[in-house]
Length: 266
Image 1: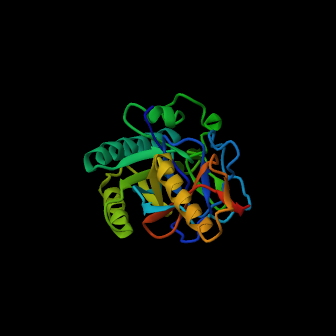
Image 2: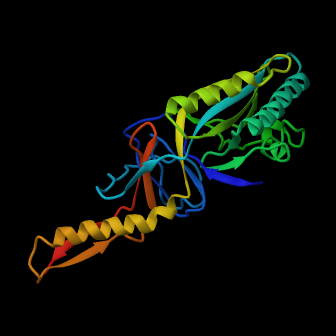
Image 3: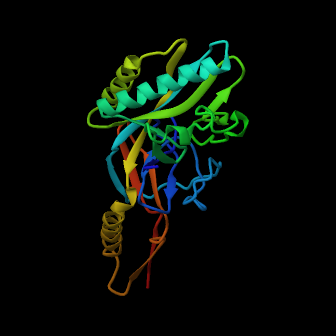
């Protein structure tokens, strides 16, 4: 499966808590939720914590894309019919997304593209490869009650959960219009339908690529601070080996930082 990103779900919020990553090879999504930065390389799931306040020095930049949770569902009477209808609408959505320059993705943190070749791996119960009760891929969706399963059938409604990702090349409103328009154009199959859930979230591609620029900014700020003291004073900087953090600061921008500290001393 083609890995295309890492995601943190949530509606757009200006006071988003910081999030951390150990690895810079992914796409990161910023949220108002708090996450643990211990063993974030494995991204096990949401863990509440008292997040530290970001430092003053960092890098603010526009996000690369926006994502939205969606649900495809059917309430047909027969389970086999529900599966056929949801499957047909999913495949149609995959084809249309490709034609319109969007991506269907799954994952709570690490976003993986859903294609015609891979959808059965993401939804094995829908493909008849696995007992639905054993399909515990619940990293695809999040709300106030915690993650929900990617595949769910309560006996009356069958639901699969995934996300739509679009490039952020304008306002957040434009991104929402693209997603809404795309979903309206996905043809229904029988009693199937598709809905948007929650709010938009922002993504950044490979945030660790900005580490050197953040180092430069920290060095400049620290050097400026020590310049107000005599030549007998020196500077001690710590935390530069920490994981990169990020938070949302506007509808379209994120703030990237390293939780450093420095001390001026003789």
